[in-house]
Length: 260
Image (cartoon, rainbow, N blue to C red; front, side):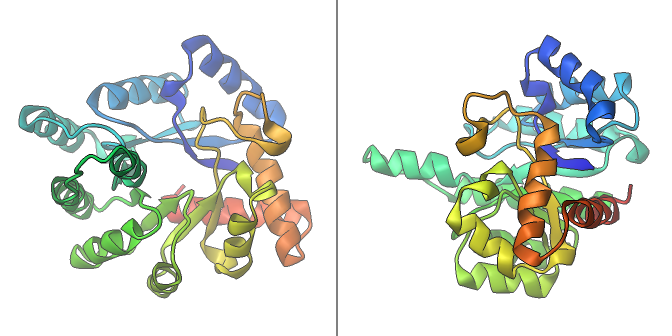
């Protein structure tokens, strides 16, 4: 299988090294390794250079952090555009800061979304120019804004990772053929299970979003790419697939989306 979304460079180096060494014995062929900012991109690139064909890098700016300064953003865009197209597979992780905004509003602070929307617009423009898929962090009502921008840039290859959102967004994303991916929380979150039952099987992938930790049967465990096999089994059970059939289908989807 292929972990469709992981922050590999966020693990401690020795942990990442151990994880990579274990993949062949656990039935994991590759990892889609997303990035947070320019320093993160460079670390992801190094991991990919050491593990060719296994670590498949994506480069971007994660929205759940302070906005980049103009010079920082310019350096990131220039760096991404300077990379050989064959050496990375997507622009990501990019999106909108739902959780940061919610926390700020809970504290009674004002949160201006407009600069983040402008940043996402710019990054999706980059993905469009480079003809690369976009890996999106856009949940709940933010997904509707992301859909507006994807349509503006005529981007069909969009992957909404760990998605949850309103009916309007779900219907629009299905109509546009956007992919989503499920994490280990599909084993214990009814909201996620309900989404998994209705989203088209041909538009589904499995991810860990590691090193983010999970609850339920994964409580206290380091998030490992092999957990996507349990994701596949849980998703498959909702659709009447055997674990093997589910793994095969989700892997084929991931290969198709990322042109692997």
